[in-house]
Length: 434
Image (cartoon, helix red, strand yellow):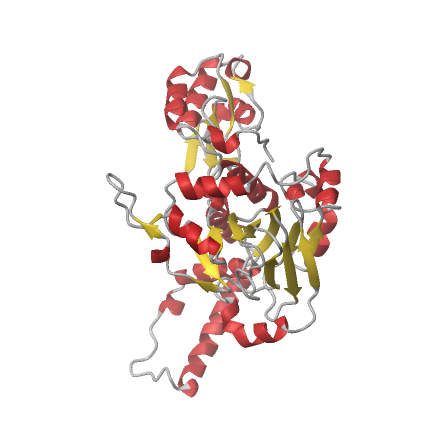
């Protein structure tokens, strides 16, 4: 797929998407202004009002029974204990870590930043954005919302261990961006491991010193230092975190396969002094030689490439859940399926179909693999096309086979009907799919 087809990525990046993919991705920061984003989308209503708002913040905090860790509160870089803004939910809901709206209000009035974490699991339009970006980018996506009082800074200069897209929702925020002190950090290499270097770099001239207005977007590769200060009013932005799959992750899949080698599983000698480098040196050299032999074979071996793909598939495909379905309506659709049933693939459900050695079909899903008979190939291709189809048109030659396949895929949550999907009405009212 060409990057120019990636409509969810287009929400956050103006300009040529192919150029972004080849020149900016993972390399340097990119600022996209509201009007430029609207022009490239061909949108008469620019901005992110369809995704989130300050009213949505109040709705989540007041009425949704949020619990930790879906909320975090901080001031000037210091995170406050959750006991300051949580309590039980009263009679019949005595869960002790539910968000207390009155305590959040008091902390916000005192200059604290409110962070709604995992927003891709609690607000339907943001869920759709995250699911679409997962498919567009090929990497798992999370979304947090940062709501900052006027003239306040939520977090001091730091870097993230994932790429981010910042989408300014309300108010304005001034961003300072500095070059990395530790390029391309892994998830095990947080910024506080380099606290001194981060503090020193933050005192230098920034690469970017820009104010983001509603509808503006900013891309920051992992490792880039950043801090943000709200201007003269309440500011809110979404941070879309992209948990990039790295070459180091590929190395991990290769190393995992070395557990099959008995020589590499063998014990070190009895009485070895592991604190003595000289004692360890010959064993390290032997392990390195043996591992190099295996890695040379595995890096070009189709079977091991398939093993690596299976491991990474589970990590990436399970990173974002597909669109929500309504269980009762979905169950009713399973029992009522027939020639007039309208079906489509569930948005955001990653999948792959390939034949087995015996001719049967394997439908690989994020968490499992379904086996289907070879005769299911024709209806399967139509049902998984992504378009809405009427079942009777799919199975004109063998209608019975199409019904059996459709019922199986409805039961497994692979297919949905127009009636069986969608979030709560107040989440989606007035919104359009990104």
